[in-house]
Length: 226
Image (cartoon, rainbow, N blue to C red):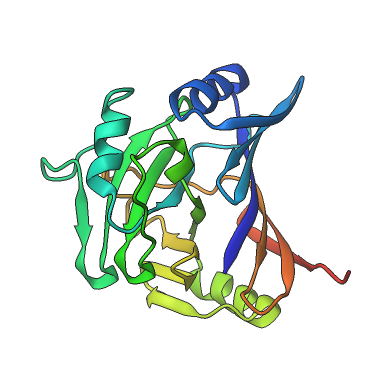
């Protein structure tokens, strides 16, 4: 799975634009009076002014062996979020390491280095090493319903987890992180997730492109028939 575009909502449009343009140093692709878009490597991230959202969790893949370098880069700009006193968190079952930080909206943003992908860079870590959007969280009360919709309409499979508390759907280049928000909380802050609307354009690794709209805990998927 590959996430091509992700549209989120914000109450603080100007602050978010400043964060992504000047803190993460991402290229500003487009802006209007009520939205802006930045280039996240191979993906596009858009924020639209709105007040229906609480907060989001999403992740960016970085080179597989540069988590320490990414920490040194980001900590010069903002504080990272710790878990059990650690700035860099290991996920042994995923063969990955990650760090987390807040953006201007207090969204939970993650850099994750997935060693299985063997994404190698010899360059010093910079914005160019923020490769693409690789995760978006979906807080819900019905994980099985979300999975069945994704599986039936786009063919995505379970990467990890179950229908009780947490289920990662897709693969290491793109995942929907589906969480029962009454059972499980977001790492590393252990905040309770709440459903927030978003739109995403993704492909399922078989050349098929889909737009997914999530609102009021309901999913609508539209297949690109071009």
